[in-house]
View 1 (cartoon, helix red, strand yellow):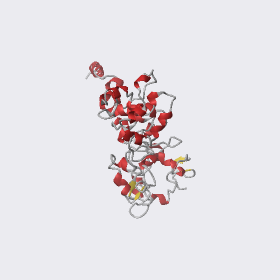
View 2: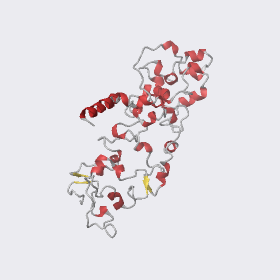
View 3: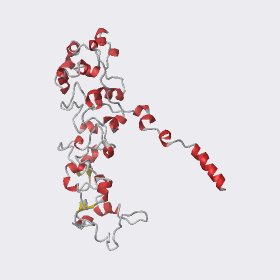
Length: 320
């Protein structure tokens, strides 16, 4: 093939390749069903005459009203800063005048039934979008998977009153994450089922940010892995860092939910775990195992010598 023919082929090929920002749709545009809820719009003028007040709702929904009085949402009744649109029942269900005048017509009020998860979460975020706990919900995996607020929360009849949850942890989380539940039954595990820890100690169900986004992990105060909140002695910084800790995080070696290993390692034998990286290959800069380390007779417990495996201030090979 001549130079001219090759150049022509390249031009023709590039002519059919759209720019990256056009050829690859964004996550939101790829599927309408995956579009996350948007934060509430800025305050607009409110027609106060369309609101009837919670006492009017009580005349028909007395049983629900009694439960509502015991929930944290009741304090909206005394919040006069933002007006009637953010008080009582109508803060969630919208103005009720047309609903009342229509004899209880459910089409004239927001009922949270038969609507998309996006619309439901949009309602909740109208109030709950301004604190650190909830501000990343729109980019979180629950929102992208069309999990709405009321899939976990029950404003009227909560089983767990403090957070208005439909069930207590960890049963609530296990109802969807059924593959995770058996991991906490392994011989060595974080004591979630025993009630000494909660899923939300490590995960933020309302969404994460940056590298924590995929697993909804909470970040520590230093924006590092959440494990360091408890295991602060492993955080460093060290003079000689163990690269996997900083690059891949704790899960490069550990199974956080449960393991057959006392240290929650991915393998029951320590040397097998280390050999996952420290095996001499032509395309890796990771040092291999020295030739005098006979794995069949000795040297199977790497951390007997390399005791400071998370990082060291004194030894480049983590001897101390």
